[in-house]
Image (tube, rainbow, N blue to C red):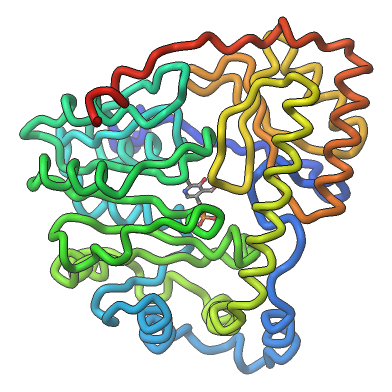
Length: 372
Ligand SMILES: Cc1ncc(COP(=O)(O)O)c(C=O)c1O
């Protein structure tokens, strides 16, 4: 029997529930729920048959992306969205037996990629506050720590990590690459991009799948100091981002106004959804992203099913570490949020859901004390 590498045999699988989403309101995957900039659609309409015959040239768009971000071209690598960025980072820096440290619950692809490299995933569980466990992450650093993944805003909690905390972690682990996943940056507004090239071990990733609305084109980037980027560039396939995506990327970046509009829709919608949740007495965690994590309790599946029957898809996060009974709701544009809130009121009524089912215990946050 032909066997794969041991690490592949043992790594977890990720099967996102993507089937049957076509005609529903997609509040389950934290995508842009509306559309990219109209300028992107113009680019697509003008793609010729010949355009499809040529290999894509990444480098010119890399220069444009770097300029857009205020970085040097050597500090930026375009990737097949952040999923590939995570792959490239782990593939470049992790040897078998190295430790990769991250807080959980967080994005599952960290587990998948770290374990595929035969490295050890060191997971630090957040407490019920779901705040970033800063003190315990610091304590978990060892001489074997080669990669620390910091997701801010974090998926699926919506929580953030202060820049001062990121810098303190980078200082405490000079032997490690500090990878800041800024997939949800636009909905938050804080970034460590100004530290790129100044702090020797900080790198970050950004995606065009969220605020820009290009999830289907698969495009994102890694930014970091040139000496680290050199290794990652070597590890990346030369044609990792297709030519249609590269052209659309340029158009999307040029339309700042559109991204500002979409981001504002999310920020306003996030507040409206939070107000509705408060009114319905559904507990939730504060979010700086385009989604809100709620705690429904033991009948989480019933609520998700009742919402699905109304054509609104939510994501059951109950299986995530520490998230028993939790459901995540993506925020969309105004009319979509109104539809979601109306459906939520009906669904709660239909299943006769009671706030007592979902109490979040009050827990004092030790990490916060240590940081202060
Ligand atoms: C924290 C985080 N990072 C990365 C990604 C991957 O995004 P993409 O591969 O579409 O850029 C996601 C997707 O949901 C995410 O939540």
